[in-house]
Length: 68
Image 1 (tube, rainbow, N blue to C red):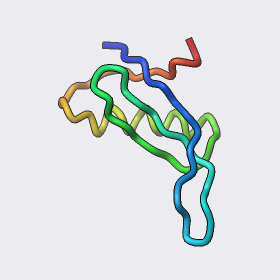
Image 2: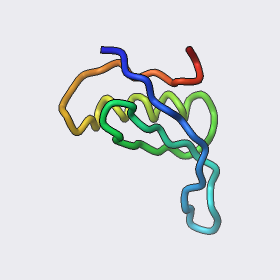
Image 3: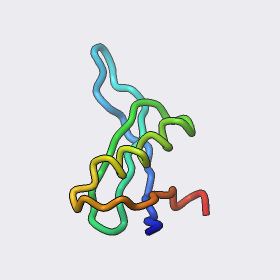
Image 4: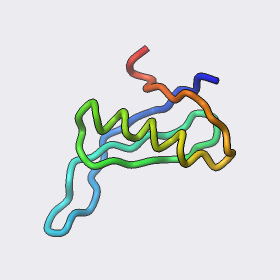
């Protein structure tokens, strides 16, 4: 199943300062994943993590709301 995720920019705590990062929010269950960086690769990593960490045990295809 194709599931939309809302990706937003956040700051994650680093060793010495906060690091610009991204967070993906699943539209079906509300599960969140986070990745350091704000590049396209960081956004894709969040979506891959969403599939790996799905609390419902589903194998969905997660997509970015903004890229439709």
